[in-house]
Amino acid sequence: MTSPSDGGPASRATATHPAGLPLGGRDRAGEETLPAPTGRPAIPLLEAVRADEEVVDLIEAADEFIEAQGYTEHGLRHATLVGRIAYNVLSHLDHEPRTAELAAVAGFLHDIGNVVSRAYHGQTGALLAYQALGRLGVPTRERAQVMAAVGNHEEQHGEAVSPVAAAVILADKSDVHRSRVRTNASIAEDIHDRVNYAVQSSFLRVDPEASTLTLELTIDTAVSQVLEYFEIFLERMIMCRRAARVLGCDFRITVNDTPVL
Ligand SMILES: [Fe+2]
Ligand SMILES: [Fe+2]
Image 1 (cartoon, rainbow, N blue to C red):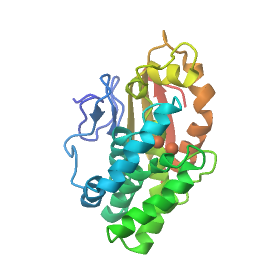
Image 2: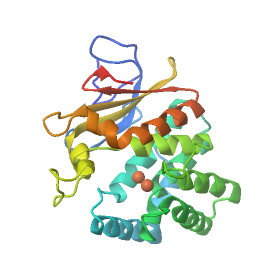
Image 3: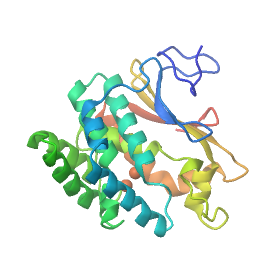
Image 4: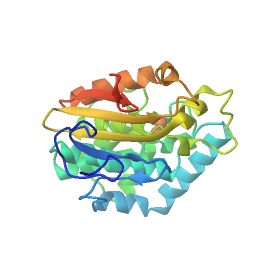
């Protein structure tokens, strides 16, 4: 039997392990964890985008500006994790490989617009993504898929307008973890930092048989009460529920192994 932290093939639920397959997340050390046996699949278009110096420069600069405003980590680490989880979501729900690849790229690029401004970063990021993928020769219809997913990833302006957009929403909103909190963060005064810091591990799990997508969180309740998580993330969770429905799934959450949604 494999654990959520080391991944493993899909299986039915037992007393200690829920059914399904972990799609990815962060373990207690904040390290990216992806399911075996697939591990890190080759995603050629994602690798091409990750190798593009202009894209990397923009994401790194965006994270510097975001740090200056006191936000959690939004850099290459977050981008890569969201891209891989978005890919896994669609792969394990039997979408076309190319569609999953577009979700990976949209996930990787989703926060690039923070280089312009935090405000409307989905919309500015969509245009930057369209431009970057044009440079890499990606066809217009595929760039449109990525553009819509990037432009719709934030709860203020976003809707899960397609499976690609739904996968990016689920992957992005799942990445809450203490390793994203900056070292100079104010845990006591800032509820976002406190809630992120309280999350010791986070995994998104799919059960294709039961048609469920489950966000599994381990929260240190000595740092933040579970209620605080929902206080700041309720809108996100509603967005995830809608996104899961677009993929034909119910969205669930467990906190410290207890179902809460
Ligand atoms: Fe964002
Ligand atoms: Fe994000």
